[in-house]
Each structure stands twice: as structure tokens, then as C-alpha cells.
Image (cartoon, rainbow, N blue to C red; front, side):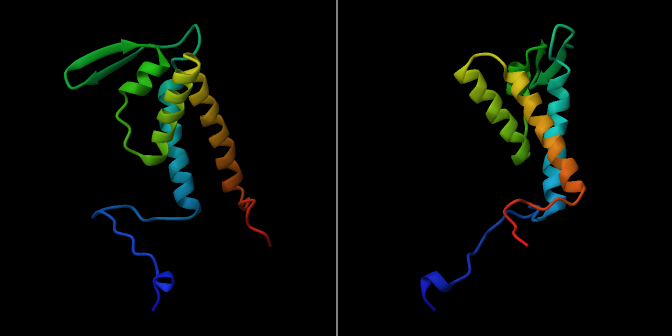
Length: 125
């Protein structure tokens, strides 16, 4: 059997979640929504302060960029929100909370389409 005919071998750590499909996409969106809900309440002139405890260090802030940096997010999909927050901060220096909230709203709309049974646009029937 030639090298190109062999199926790919994927090694995963014990306990790794291997779920796929629509339920996994919705689960990823829910994880992102949890992060968005934390940061969203810091937005605007009535933004609420967050108290963050990290290895004995306490931080009180209502700055979305600081909150995103201090959160220890391990979920792969939710980490993308941290990445877009960092990219926004590096490029513009402002708007980190807004970009996370905007992404969260887009994901919320996408979730409603998924739940209504809308198929992915790359699938041709």
C-alpha cells in the first residue's frame, strides 16, 4: 500500500472529547458565549468591575482587555476570542471588548440558524 493510500492516524490524549457535527458546533458556540457574557458586562459607561483572583494576585478592573488576559481559558474555540481580543489590542489599542461582543453576537445568530436546521453553505444538495 502506497503512502498516499493509508488512512491518517490521529493520536489523542486520554479523555479527549472526539464529538463532531452540529452538537459539537453548538457546544463550541456555548463556550464562546460564556466568555462573552463575562466581558460584555464591562462594556460602556455603566460597565461593571470584575474581581479576578489569579495565583494569589487579585485584580479589579472593568477593562475588557485585562479581563481577557487574566482569564485562563482552555477551551479551543473560546481561545479564539482571546486571540481576536489580542489582535485588536495590538493593531488598534482599543476596542477589545467590542470585538469580543461582536463575535459573540455573530455566533449567537449562527447558533439560531444551526438550531433551525440550516445546512452549511458548502453542502450542495
